[in-house]
Amino acid sequence: MEDKNWLLQMNEVLQKQALQKTNEFAKQFGLALSEGDMDLLLKERRQSLQEQERIELRGGILPRLIFEFCDSPYIYQDNYTETIARLQEIFYFYKNESLDELTDDELIALMKHEFEGSCQGSLDYLEETCMERIGRSIRCGRSWDMEGGADD
Image (cartoon, rainbow, N blue to C red; front, top):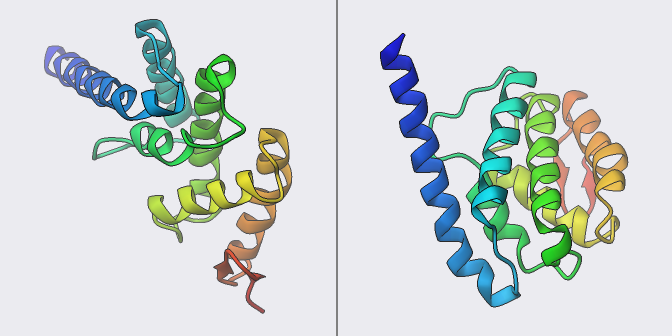
């Protein structure tokens, strides 16, 4: 049991270090995570992974989400932490809903495309409409093209 706690603690340390590195990049867009924000995102990560019954074997998607979305005109310092937390939750949910047919990078790219495009920064629309449509298409055996939508 102690080994498990040690491994979990080490993973948390590595995750937090990765988030600290994102601050250097996101700073150019006027965004930064405080220590408390990082702790909150890591807590949300643990909860989302548990709720979706997923595990992460590599570095995690939080830094990748931050690098992909921090240049969005719809994200600013006042909504930064909450937006990243919600994007993370949406990611894990639709990773399952798409039956793992999409790579992490493909799913993040689709999320960004929809968020910036038809969603115009609306996380509710992204989750409840755009990603639902994409997930349903993939579950029905159709591939998804960012430009044209589902292939029939």
